[in-house]
Picture 1 (cartoon, rainbow, N blue to C red):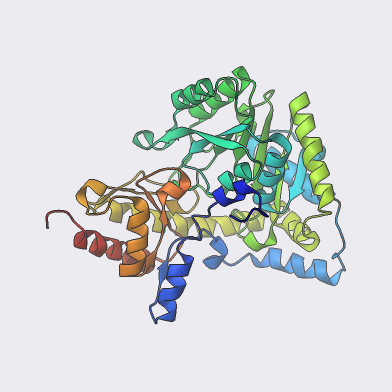
Picture 2: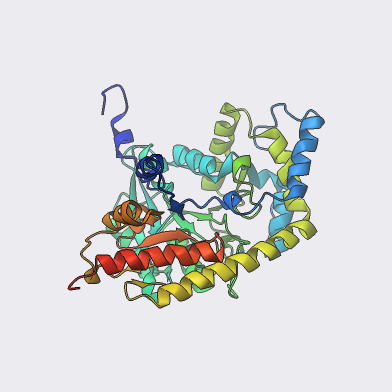
Length: 407
């Protein structure tokens, strides 16, 4: 990399985008690409009308000025009330900070907590964008695991061992993805309580990314860290992108509810960073306040969408169960499925080789599991219609049959 650019930027990659150039080249040559790669729900589910109408109303009312740096007060009140309604926890509006999506919240958190040489602990598999935010601060990610053999629950023994192995360079935080992207599963209440206890015993700050917390199906039982971490320094991340199908609105929120020195210092630091960028999207804040507050309409939208996600996710699961080349844990949240490839049956050695060849040969774009911290897996979005899901797995089967060992 050019000496003009900081060296650690060269270590950043985006697995979500690495096949884009190949896909675009194939399109230019007349091929139609079937893509189940990017988890943007708005590609499949329209942002609800009642939210769009409030956005338009905000524009007409002239709400296009800089909003308060930490977010509109009514939006923060709506967020606080939402957590009280869903999880019976009482948050003050001062505990809530509005950001431009969870991505900005993560960026601000890492900027506030990490310096060169520090470590941060992530539980694999994880959302791909966690790593760049750590690396950009010159810090190093370290990893514990979810367990495929235990329905992707958190392996707390792995977590304990990772912290122990870090020695004096103890991680600045533990980051949990709850529900999990890419697996589409929910950690158990038992494992979350153990994570909280581990964070407490080791004096490590705890962060829980709960952006999919209302996208639950197949009788999933979800526990918010807010319910089990009282008295322990922690942060909850959430926003409008997934539950309200408003990804482009770029409205996220951080909740830092405790009053210990770490929590107060982080809250102040993130507030300063928010102030330096002036404000999030003002009309979007106005619209998302309605999106969160109008429980009746939000529930109606979610009910219909979850019927669809449950149906297509279960279809994907059933198709994988029939395959001799894939194995999977049944999803019950978000809109992803994360099968393991039986590479020992194929003349293919890695998930990266698998996804690139699959795109070139079958014109199906999906993502490699190693980009999410788990080698030998693939991630597919389960939001498309049933016929699209069927076609995708038909192409995977054709591909695997072609590359099967000892044909």
